[in-house]
Length: 399
Picture: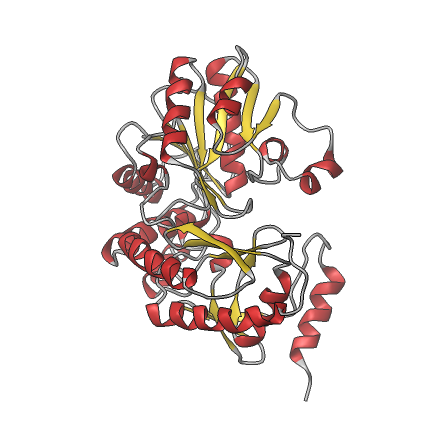
């Protein structure tokens, strides 16, 4: 019998670009919060496609919407008006706070950030941007300039000039970095790749206030935290503020590639032709996003993320292990910081039937689909307890 897994691995390894560090699983099917590999093994999915599959996999209503639209009209650039695009803009307005009404549609989170940076410069007439250490905003040149991790930045230097990085959740350092040439501040409400680190309400309210005082635009990158992930539609709602520009992606269309840059009233009117996207707002992605928003509402997934997330955080916090330094997060965006390297735990979890992410060398990042049952969260927590024993005897990073 042909070993199809080795065949798939070999084919992809021979022809892929090489920029991805791949795991050995060949994932071929998904349903709800489960994924299956080509050997037929089932996994509890705590990755959600790196925060994309908030609705889980193969949600029947999403599948139906995509299928119907694919047989009607797949592409239509914003050279023309379109019924699905118009409906989507209305759906987004229905879940966004008042004032965040103008939307540029694109294809990914990094594109949403690129547009946000361009629009901030255009609107203010200034060039500089203040971002946070440990922040991640994408890999295209503008977004990469806002991203802090040296391993991502250094191969592509020089990047876009004018970017400064300050410690996250430290208002004094941020305020000191602002100048007369600062166009924008860009922040994640919860740093995802930076270790699943939520900012404080006091910090974000102070940042909001100083941006208004100094006529600086506040960009919030909610590519990972948007659409219910943290137990609110958008994580900034936890902070009692509204940004001037909001970057969205990942969970917006149930797994179909889409991004959006949402503009508030402090952003000037944009000239025709100043930016664009061939595929942005295409009818197929728009139909998927419309269906996704309807599913979020009808299945109470935002509320469920808050309830399930609180339970999951509590359950993980009660794991008695010398290997855990801290459990933190918001909603169903959870980080488990360890005292030693995290990758052996990820490998052990995989062997036990749970797929998880990392967020730095010592942080386990858990992003379950919002549709996940509590029984699966409980099973995953039990299996994490078991997986942590792989670290017994390892040196920890506490010195």
